[in-house]
Length: 177
Length: 390
Image (cartoon, rainbow over all chains, first blue to last red):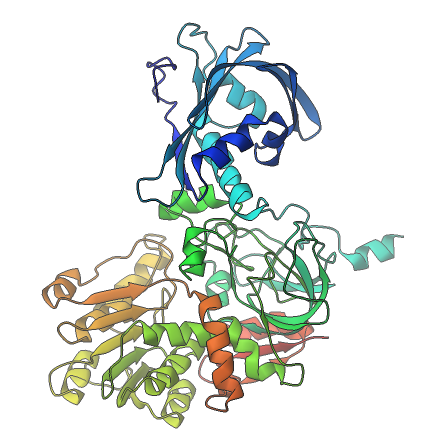
């Protein structure tokens, strides 16, 4: 991935994953802001305010956080890089790079979150914390996994909403009512 | 609905919980008619598998009737009688396309946890801890099944549940364990562990052309069962040196292939087995691999050791020098159940095999907690417990 990130940010190692789709299919999917909510954790929606300027709304347990970003690198079927422009003090960037899988089984996708080289700032990984509550590399990995699942199967695996013995039992509920 | 829930080490409770619902478009809901308790459920029961949470519904050997399907389900229909494999596969990733379903990339929502433990995560499993996805299990009146088109086998409505239930796990598991040996006609095979998987592996080895199968255990009831299906039994409690015994019985050569159908909770009286128990009690070891050590040491030069037995952590004092010097092949892993289900159903329908011979107990779900205790404490008489529901 080209030199966009501040190289002193050693913790911001990229996450990589193979996806069984062509680079073109993957690029077309992520280039459409409406698709990002299908795989990015806690992302409620992304709207394009004007070409290249996106408004991201995150919903974490009912708490909404809004960011605005601009696309600073857009190479078709290869690389997409966003830089946050609002709130201005954050200045974090995110990047997705797509390469052909040398084994011929689709593509290798790399995701990285980090600090913009020309705007080092103080808050490393703030975007990650703000949006996901976790470190950048782990969240990149989780989001790539979800992207892979959505593209390969049409859904993201979940157990959210399944029953368990941790909830009040039906019997208890009947008794209490 | 009623469901068996893990409530801590050696504590299973039957609780009343919510019905499952469709969560993803390829899901289905089944009304469970019959389920089973597996030997590997006892690893959960005994607290050996990390990441269990109180209230988790357990169970991964399940069958029933489809009562609801999601909008993207194409093959399965409401009313179908289905057996559900224990591993959950997507059917679309590179591993599923190669029929390596238990290595599926796309069904574990906690794959980051699995990667942290095991370097790479595979398929999720029903009712088998949050490392394996945290999916609610099938020892319950109803079950949500993701990717039902991939994770089900439709069976004839008039066939008894007990004849096909074990297509969910132990029949494909024992069969794959034997297949992994590459058995040639006339081979000799050693099987450690005469639980249900071991018994099925013995049966499968004979089906594949083995002439002689040694069955090693110390639970008398299980050894009798192994003997009844043609194995030559060795009780390691009374054998004078298990490795010497096997060497003698194979003319000094060793078996052509060995199957470790015991896994991480091996019993035994060797020095290493005693050390294993002591270390496990002190929290210094995660697994007790004495059966594996014996299989590696007993196997002939150039042979294969097949490991269907579940292991979870880091193993100690494995005779890897012996394995290397003898040029052994090791094959292991969770079963690619979906690959074998139809093949083995056809064998059942043709009357070649009836896996229900392993059943020793039949219970209602209300008796589940006591059954777990019994299964854990009385392995000689208790081989396989089936739960009859609905």
